[in-house]
Image (cartoon, rainbow, N blue to C red; front, side):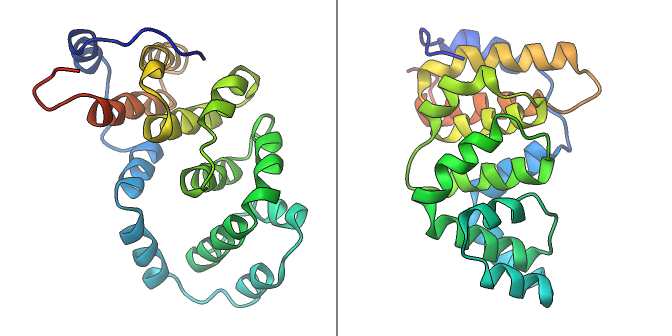
Length: 199
């Protein structure tokens, strides 16, 4: 993935008109959560039951490598939120570990937790992701990283995100992988283009 020339609204409209937007996908759900992340966190906490030993394990874990392992486990809502906060508290130590693991991980839970970390971290990982995107082995992980770039990447990525959505739709028509880059394009249009359609 690379920075390229900006697309005009005519090109973007053509993409939006031709590319599918699924009614239900994990990418669409995550996209909605990040549009209102505070409300999402409050809802998850309210809906979550106390997780007992699982929650206690998260509270007691301090070692970054151990936290990285916990990011691979499916847990109850409250434990997920506690883990997120713990990982963000140790952002400087966790960032290189998460970056290294995201390149080779095929664990969907880890990919979703890594996306949440990148979205909320103080450091914007978009440049690192763009530079290492081709090294990411898992297509679902790639899809989520594209979604992240829609929120925190630069306008020059729009063309590659359109191409990535088309590639994923062509190669994986039965999957929702293309929804990550497709939703990223929609988010970038909101971020970088005025409502009247002009740059």
